[in-house]
Amino acid sequence: MSVLLETSVGDVVIDLFTDEAPLATKNFLKLCKNKYYNFSMVHRVERGFVVQMGDPTGTGQGGESIFGVLGGSRYFPPEMLPSRKHRRGTVSMASSSSSSSSSAVPDAKGIVAGSQFFITLSDGLDYLDGKHAVFGEVAEGWDTVDKMDRAICDDGGRPLSDILVRHTIILHDPFPDPSGLPAALNSPPLPSVEQEEMMRIEAGDTI
Image (cartoon, rainbow, N blue to C red; front, side, top):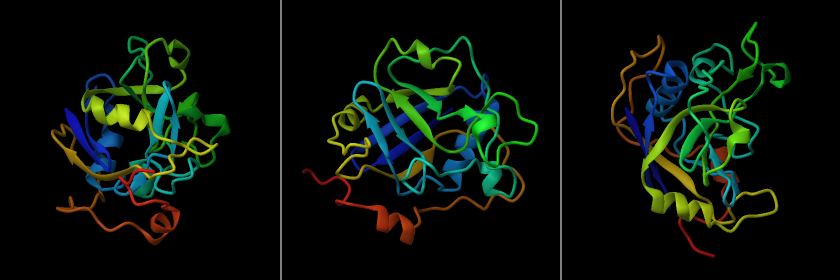
């Protein structure tokens, strides 16, 4: 069960742990199917640590789960997998405490997540275990991940030359669509006005 991310600096294939984390992977797959991530940017890079994306506002403060997109809670409680550790190429939901998240899942306890996710860039990141929900790993596209890691960034960690998720392609989806999910789009939609206003240098350009 995999998803192909087509970005402005290359492609990345993510293998998903659908058996171990059905809720987190379903959320990710259905957001991809809904083209929610199209033209969202990599908004945070910490060299040798993580590259984070999945927020359509590009601020690091936005985004919502597929359940929120369909009218439910903005956040959902992802599975925490003690057997899955954060090492190079781990893909995790950017999670937070339910007590500190506005519009969190009613009665949720512990960790909640929305749409944002990150890829870890090195081994030995055990201190992330139990804090963020692992749901996949990089299978192909290490050259693209390395390009992201080498991006020149501003003081807030955002690349000066925008790195965009242009398109997402689902290679296999074992989950039925939730009620209300629009039919899959055949081509990426145009970026929103808000996304265009956030863009700096044309994606893929060098500085």
